[in-house]
Length: 376
Image (cartoon, rainbow, N blue to C red):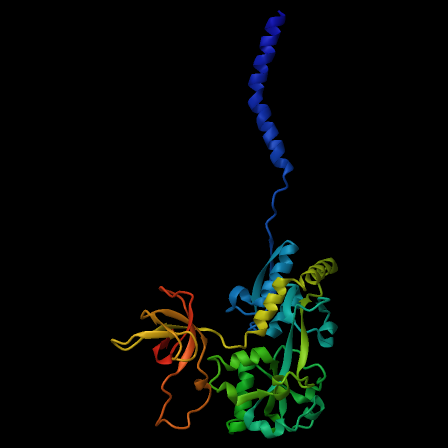
């Protein structure tokens, strides 16, 4: 009888073993906390290159900063691009309830908007002008001098006014930056039919944004037709009261709870000194430097392409295959100054390129400019 009980007990163990194993497995899996997916969060912003924009990688450096901050709080941003006045309109209703990059101003605080305790970036606020107005511009040594001009200071609809220059009568609203530069030109070439007192003499904009736009296809003007007040000092690294370094912040809807804002502020403080954030700031700072362009090396029939180790044809050279793809690192300085005559053009014009394919892939050399064809 005892032996029969042992057999029955042993059989029950073997029958129950798969069930016990399954239960143990389920218990083990339940003990591991599942990874929670990041929750989408809409963020209001506008196109403002090189800081943020739909055409920039990852929507731009400031968008990348916010993405890092929100990820640490369990969110992934979905950027909604509006005109700047519409950013405030949407934020006031609470959808979206977070926006960037915004200047903190007394006017916005009166409307109930809240701001991050720290900046998410900085920029230089400057006053652009057409060089045909240089004589007047040279007389302006401080913001106070602007109050004596006959014309107006243009500022983009939805922007904050220049700190230290809040006189509403001095400003005239323009639709966007392109419109502002066009009005600067029209005011000096006679195509503006407004009376002198209503013409725009200066345009308030970020230095980086303005310079980027002047070099783009958005304007028909030569980028050298314009300058900004205080530019001479800036080029010599001297301070100027006419150039205002201004903080850019995250702006919150009046309806947003304070604990959410405090969490964002905490993460922003932590990330501020990180190498990643510094790298993004460097990307903005270098955005106005010569951007590398892409090209292809071509030659007339039967002629070889040579790559020199320096900007002299007397140095050693490499033979480069036809149709090699290159990145132009440095154009010959000859392009930056007008020729005095065409009777004796320079024999050799060399530009620095990096070869991107073929046996010399990765090599940096100088090549004859007649061999470079820019990619469209």
